[in-house]
Length: 132
Image: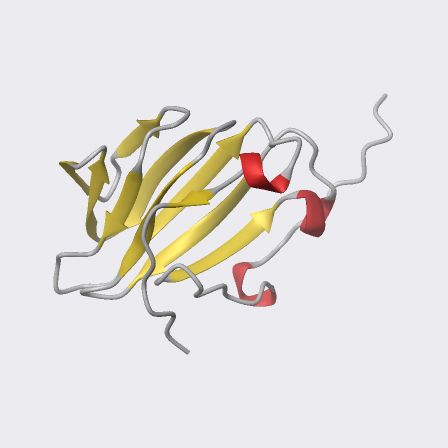
C-alpha cells in the first residue's frame, strides 16, 4: 500500500503568471504538490494573445487544447490545433503559442522530466509585454 498523499488543486486557487504573455497556472508541480518528475498546468489565451517563444533544454512538453483554437509555432513552422488536439514538443525545440481566433483558448501543458537546475528548465528567445 502506498503512503502517497493525494492532493487536488483547483485552477482558481493558483495565481496566474502573465510574465510570458498569456495566463499560465502551474497546477501540479514541485511548489503545489511536491512533484518530482514533471509538472502540469493550464494556459488561457484570449484572442490575439501569445505565449512568448521559448525552449526547454531538458524537458519535453505535451500540449492538449481543451477549448478554442491556437497556432503553435514549432521552430518557426505554424501548426494549427483545435479543441481535442494535442502536440508533442521535443527537447530544445523553440515554440510559441498564439491565439489567432476570435474566442478564448485553453491549453493543458505537461513538462517532464523536471530540470535539475532552473536554467535548464526554460529559456526565453523573445519577450512579450506582460498584461496585468
